[in-house]
Image (cartoon, rainbow, N blue to C red; front, side, top):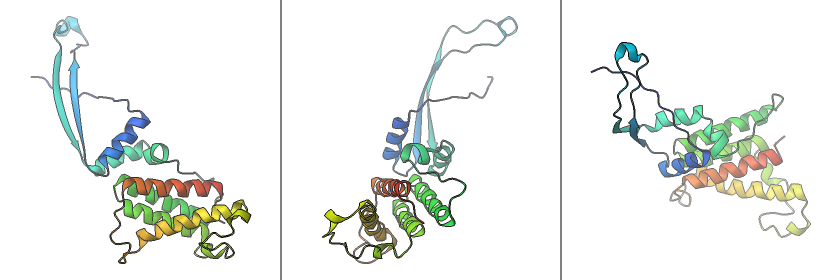
Length: 205
């Protein structure tokens, strides 16, 4: 019996891939392939006529999470389908380069199913982009937001940042309040999506 390698290609739409990632939820992946085809000889005069009968069969292939992550990275899934991670030009500041590295860390953690680490990396990106003193920029507003109707656009975007600070802080601490929190993929995706939107709208210094 002769053996020959066969290359197979599958066309996966972005929406299908996103659905697959939600179902995988950081775990392994099993591919079930249903094959049906014909054997075509390159030189029928030498090897005989093509078979008229078709063949079929099923193949199961288990993909480890690390192997699948390599495929997703090659497809740039985290930057294209999962979220729109902003790209910064070559003249970006050292501060924004550090923030971008934390964004990449968060995206990689989501692909690996490490959602707590992803949210924590968003907190680190906030600090890299805006600094640890960002919370004190608008003391006239405070956390009560009592003067929000008089706040300008910059102050209102600052309020969004403060809300994300509060969320991301919980992933960086392990006290009695934060320890029971179960971080899920949708939590990490939401945090990263909000952060990237803020960085595109109003990047740090």
